[in-house]
Image (cartoon, rainbow, N blue to C red):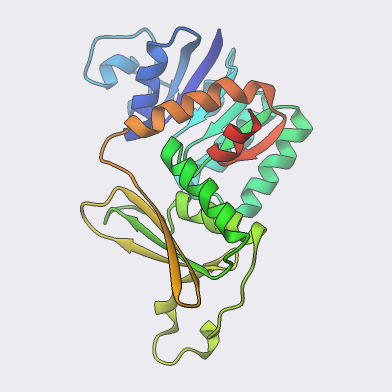
Length: 265
């Protein structure tokens, strides 16, 4: 049995993953981290019957006897949590967005040095992984593209982890110069979005969106759009997260993207 700790176990996605672990036959939930619920039984923190797991306030307190840490916390915390877990010899699955390419490179080096695995994905939805895999294939032949990143009005980071990961990975496949450089734009150059990995990203933040990511490829007289839309529940993310938890103990170093993990098998 693989022993798992969930950081962010009282949050939107973390709770759903923790509940799935409680009913799993091959994975066992042994720890939970949440600053707001520290000292309470996890089930009671959810407003339910006790589950026999006491929530702690910091990842460092929760790693004894743990094989895999799942992080669904916040951009300001995830890197520290991951580095603490790696230094403790604990494999890690990162579902929190906000890590940069340089952050992930640092995590990869630390994981390789410690002989543990890390799986990081901006989106653990299986359909989002398929959309990303398709976009990476298209980028080999159609380098002209831009990304539109939609999320809720209250989302604190921009772009979303899904859009950032897609842009950085597209940049590793092909790079294209803008026909009109942003520095030459007249009026408000910021309206052209942010350049990440050589791709312009435009972040839209409005009510009714959860996370939607659209990449538009273009060639003379034609366009191809690949878009993923997430619904309002956590259901799409649970299966992909648990798939990563089952796979990460056999990995050394960082695997970025659920699609990359799927293609390894």
